[in-house]
Image 1 (cartoon, rainbow, N blue to C red):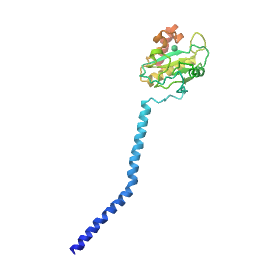
Image 2: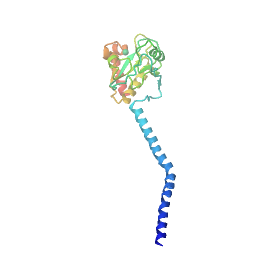
Image 3: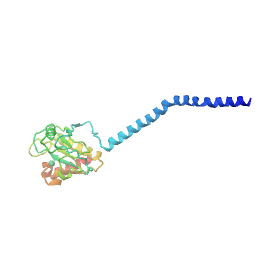
Length: 216
Ligand SMILES: [Zn+2]
């Protein structure tokens, strides 16, 4: 009898490992699925963080984003160190449209560009990603976002529609970049160039513009 008991116990003991294996085989799909799900969720989170960190181009629908080709001569690809000011310019070429100026920036022999061009009808075209430097504001390309504005004649005065878009875009950019609404400069303030001409020759118009951005 004692021998039989031992044998029975021995048999039971021998049977146990196969049962464990069966259980392991049943659990294995979950053991693969759960880590996979965790990896997928983490990858999604990391992707979103990278996108935010790189400042992927998220702009409102009223901005027509026509980013210049990466290999175009005027686009350096260099990243902005930070954004300290929004720099306002005028195109200096009366009667030209925002699209014409954008396409000019894209030409192989052009070495200037701007983040945005505002047209005579108030249309807004984006040419350079928000996290990248433009070639518009000389030594301040490193820490400014630039806006070029079209104008109908040599006075450089903007149309009502262009002006309204300039106020709207400047206010949006200041908020988007988390800088004060007073962080607006003229190209003139950097180099002394008469740009934007009307705001240089009419200081009161410049003051009014800055007030309009604050009040927007
Ligand atoms: Zn300028």
